[in-house]
Image 1 (cartoon, rainbow, N blue to C red):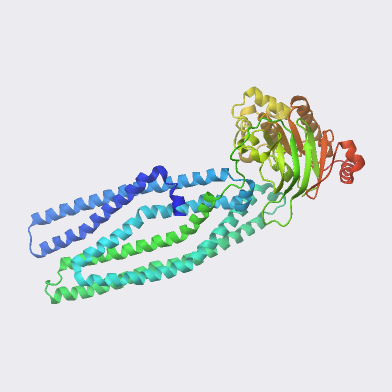
Image 2: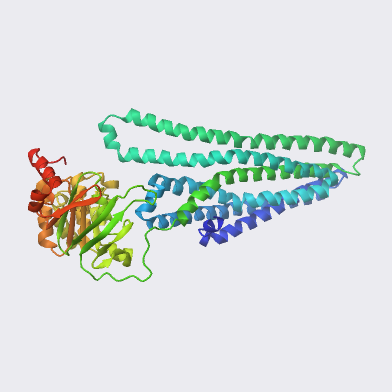
Length: 580
């Protein structure tokens, strides 16, 4: 795990090394200062002149300024290293997520991935900051201060040695009880983020049904759950401070009492005032370094679980990989399903698709009809390998889709998914997702085919109109037409429309289909639709039912031979059409 995280340090190795170096110098200088003060006190007690005092004073000022400079430089380098490490870690996670298949995304969930890239990375960043600064300062200070304490105070320094194991045992008990609580709270963070994401996406529905109060109470309950777990963990961790403080002051009282007694009874021969003052200073340094170490351990307790969650993402292998010896896509837009069965995960009890077989010739227009849950969307997602088949094979352009690289395959298969997504940016920038080199003329042509040009031209900035995040400033029908235009700009061999005209009127739907027929006759077109009118002029129509192909035929053939198709057709014509 640590090796995997260390890979994200990269160009920040230099500040990661310089920070501990400066910290080490700072600690050495700080440990020398009490020694100089001790000598100054001894000289004053012996009745030294002003010159001696000035000399020691200048030395102390120089040491203090040098220590301050080292501390400041350590802070600067530490900030560079930790912030850079966090930046690289987020970039590495994001890059890894971009390679994930739908199956990988389903495993983690969107909310969990967001938590891992924000909260978890922040926790690891803070821990790394402590590793290269405080985790270096603490042990060094402990070692140097303890060594100087023995030099200055002799046997009295053994009190500090006895104290360390007691504090370590107390700290171990705190961590042991706090760790399970921190582990549980991150899972609840995922649930909290999921609740926020769901609410924001469904804001229009929430307001339409006047459910704001319900959603607030629901979120309040989730937030309170997170708060309760954190409170329990923090209560345990909070014991660390009082425990350290109690031990610190107890030892100081004992050292001061015994030390004063030794100074007085030995008349300064066994221990003088300067040595006692230095011993007290070194004692504070020892105990403060122990407190630093305790804080580090507490932070590590929190960050360790975050680190595990981050590494899970970094080490997650894409379930869909390119073949070792891929073939170049030189085929046409033909599609063949050969005894295909599919389930979403190995643990799933039933197949989403069962024994599906059919052939589609290049350039054909094929409609796909079926009830909710009949696996229409699942079927077309196998064509571009958004998922891999469980059994059988899918052939595109005469080759198994697994023989192509993902880039080659997906550059020839354009999908307009059921949930249309536009990104913040101008209309042109969104459309050039299909082809970043597309000319203005190609963009306008694609928009005319998708019947999007008619509303774009009415906008104030036309094709330079800014689209808000998620396409919030365009209607559902406009969003669908823009997504269709974006797919057309790819100039694909296969075009898949997954219920992508449900939000447009029947006249516009008919115009889009007419444009496809006239201007892209060589492109294979698969149209998933709820309306019979959207597919009735297709070359063939596939009727799906329960994850299986129920029937294949033309509109006229299916009306005569297929009960499911005829029932849908009659209900739509008698009922005035399905909801849009």
